[in-house]
Amino acid sequence: MPTPSDSSIEQGLINRRRVLGDAWVDQSVANANAVNVEFQRLITSYAWDQIWSRPGLDRRTRRIMVLAITASMGRWDEFELHVRTGLQAPRDDEQAAPLDLETLKEVLLQTAVYAGVPAGNTGMAIVLKVARELGLELAPADFFHQPMP
Image 1 (cartoon, rainbow, N blue to C red):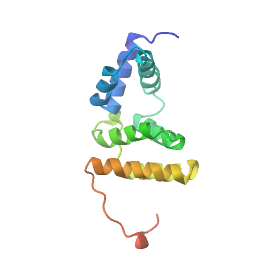
Image 2 (tube, rainbow, N blue to C red):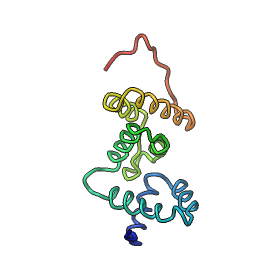
Image 3 (tube, helix red, strand yellow):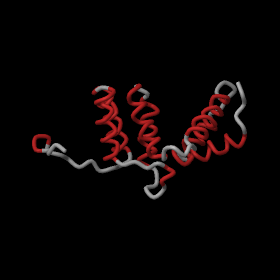
Image 4 (cartoon, rainbow, N blue to C red):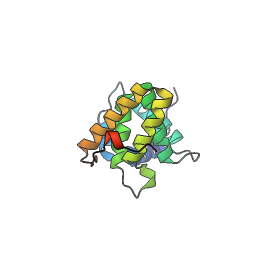
């Protein structure tokens, strides 16, 4: 397997830090060992540089796609990571791919139609759990008198 270049690793780390935050990346790097280090370098170079650096889609769109795909495939750890870091990302930093609860709701409605209601249901439960953990306000709604869009 070819070894990723140092410049690709560096750019991948920059992108990864911007989207996932320093704490997550620092933990991943600190947890490197003889078994997983090549894998960590591969995803940093391939996913976080060669894909997340491409000009064809903005980072918010890429994050939304990650959420839809991971929910569709039941990859709930990765889904939760992107929900949490998307909600925590600075709102004024496009490169950090910030999200809000309204966007997450729309992603899950779309996902439920194309990937199945169970995926949307589990995704919604994770979004609500993370929102509560982050102290985000979830306003009550009247189930019987909520207007349909």
